[in-house]
Image 1 (cartoon, rainbow, N blue to C red):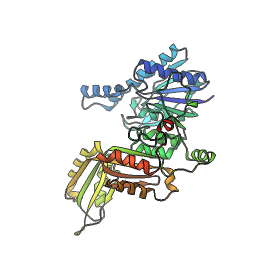
Image 2: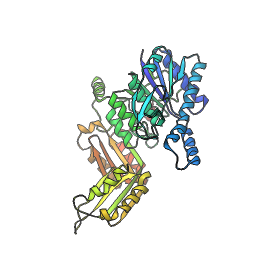
Image 3: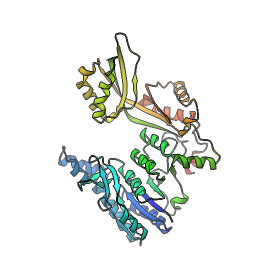
Image 4: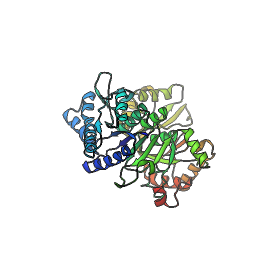
Length: 430
């Protein structure tokens, strides 16, 4: 018998027929003798609809009341799933965030998980009851409903799995696992059977949309094994235990798996892309101590994340150009803030470009394989793709390129690192 937390996203919960399909998957796990808790998202498109209602009611809405409205989508699906399971003869009940309670802190609409009082939930699961929990929501120290931002249900599921000491957390989505890259771009992309927390965290942070970054970070902190699966399987399909997707595990477990299979780690595990980047260039910045701090301190204080940074070689007369990237959605705000600080910073003008994309190669194997970056740069150069900026970490290399060359770059790199599957139909179903 295992204790399992299952999470289903918005596309899985989009309507009564799909909720019935989800209920069948949940029932199969419970019928196997497992203790089960289910975390659900709102129906696909429902959160956007509720957000629009808030904006129509009051463009300058109170974030606390906003959370009350947008959290209702998950409340509906949790109740409907509990009702559907009951109709199938299962013992099931819904638990709202304040009933657990799932304590959060920080701002409304972007709350962070604090602690979860899971004693009652565990007792209910041990008694054979299926717990159905709305994701994305919690309760503040002031006893107000809070929400965790887009993708927050992933974080809810991992946090609950940690609190109840689950054997694993199964995240059901509209894809059947984590692939070496986006299979919509590269038909020969392969499903990865196992990936480490560190690799998944990097992939999520540089554009892979499978899991919310915070959920991976939380899983790594509490060593919660996470499995990514598809909920769009036949009604008679075998349970998740025998139909694996991608298992996200600790580095120690990853090493044990590689040793047991007598496999060597590849230098690159996956390739991600992100078109939501914008490039900013400040020209003729004074080349003196403190000048760069004058640029990035106000951006940091405003909560604008800066990624790639390049400071060119100083010009004559003690001037330099500074290039960096920000999220595309924050470009206008960043530009206005820098213009406001122009006299203090001392730059000449701002040049911006939102038609760029970030391409990243990620893999723990980079630690033991030389030449990973060189392979990337050469492969792009051979196809005439210009690199505008570079950033690196111990297991990641990212470059900024023209947005129009995104798909070509992903395909070229996928081949360059030997990630292409010989038979995509077989590899994708593995």
